[in-house]
Image (cartoon, rainbow, N blue to C red; front, side, top):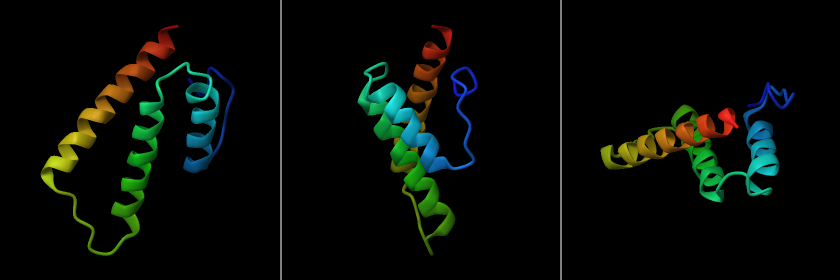
Length: 80
């Protein structure tokens, strides 16, 4: 999708911002997927940089389900 749309960046935050601008704000994708992406990035950052961070099993399972849904939706978008 990013290559298809000729967008390149080395920054996660820029990519998330571009995704929201191009797909969420234009209603090509439901806004819940923008939230899923933002939350995934925030949790990844916490896991990498916060001291003594711990995610409960239920939280991780919920994040996993959301990411599967996100990936599936991106797959649908790529087929358009």
